[in-house]
Amino acid sequence: MIPDDLEVIDFNRRLKSWYLENHRPLPWRETKDPYKIWLSEVILQQTRVAQGMPYYERFVEQYPTVFDLAAADERDVLRLWQGLGYYSRARNMHFTARQVANDHNGRFPETSEKLLKLKGLGQYTAAAIASFAFDEPVPAIDGNVYRVMARIFGIESDMLSNEGKKEFAAVARQLVSKDDPATYNQAMIEFGALQCVPASPNCMACIFKDSCFAYEHQMQGQLPVKIKKLTIKHRFLNYIIIRQGDRLVMHERRGRDIWKGLYDFLLIESKAPATNPDSLTILDPNFQNFLKKGRLTEVPKVYSHILTHQRLQVRFWWLEIPETERIDLPHGMAFYNHEEVEELPKPILIDTVLREENYL
Ligand code: ADE
Image (cartoon, rainbow, N blue to C red; front, side, top):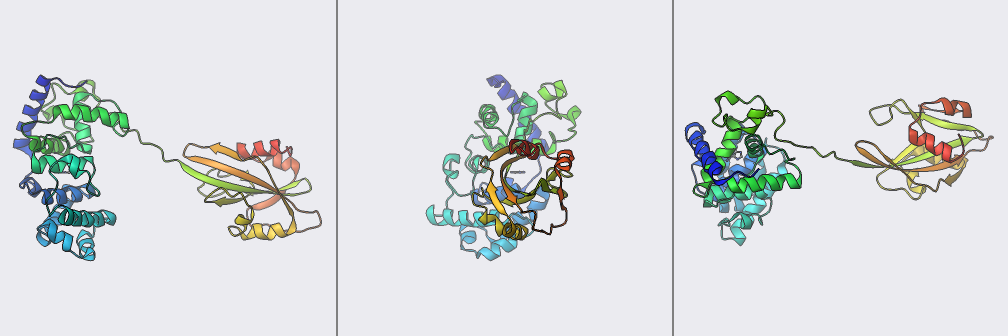
């Protein structure tokens, strides 16, 4: 998997000659000033080259050195950033400028390892500055570079997983030119941006056509592999099973939430486990009214329910209303007798609880 020395030399030779012929003359490529390189990278994390260029130029003009940015009013920095979005990035940038100005006498640390200690600088940015400004032979791996490496060298591990990242980093360390890491890193980024583009790359016109793994196996669409982790939402559901004789109050679920069209009970969702039902009364005024009319008993078991994107922790309480009481039910809720409850479409969880509680 890791290319040998000859492959590395050949890869570097081809990549560099492609870059020298094809790259865009961008202003941050004409400088060795780490401050300007850092500015460009922060802006380019937020936007594309074409949109980022005027921002870069305005920042460099208004704040030509890290001392100028450090001394700036935060409001002016945010104003200049306006339109790029994600304003905490601008605030972090301002903070880092003061860190460099005050703690480092205005000089950016000269290795990626030391740069990483500055606020808001990740692996990629630290490596970009260290290689572009100080010629440290460290690979700067952004999304473009992941794509180029995965395709050419056939790296099929998930670029978002820790193991995948390690594998990419190992190949990248091998590939990075020890003679001219600055040009190497710019070239990898540029090659990904212009030639090895995400969709429909023009492989017929590619310098790596005779050796590219993805081209050979027609896997341009599958590489790089990015397995998005599902973000799991934790929810706390509290159900009040209102009972009068053998009848239960059931609620028809509508809207865009889970279990649409199925029937459950009066539901009060809380942000944390609700061990005390009193804490639920403020969340639902109906519950507060119902409580006055009946007797509450807790179902001791706490249920866990797992859905694709959600983990539910669910608690139940019975609320017995004497036959003599009349209660007004809100829209979407009604009393159903035993047979009807049996017949209604219900989430499995609701069915299970009714069985375990010996109602069904
Ligand atoms: N995107 C991120 N860094 C870049 C750079 N140095 N040149 C072009 N595009 C980039």
